Length: 49
Image (cartoon, rainbow, N blue to C red; front, side, top):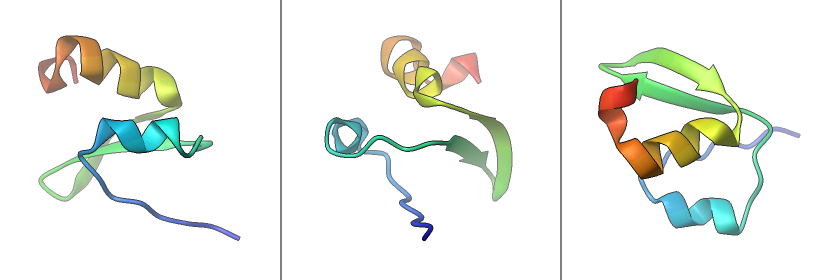
């Protein structure tokens, strides 16, 4: 089973633990990885992507 969650709400990751994280900009995936991406965005913002 697969589930797609689209969110800007970082705290959702305290409830779920996704296998993959994708960052989209202008309808395109610009970066993929694991929860390390979420931590980096949380600490440094979206400018790092």
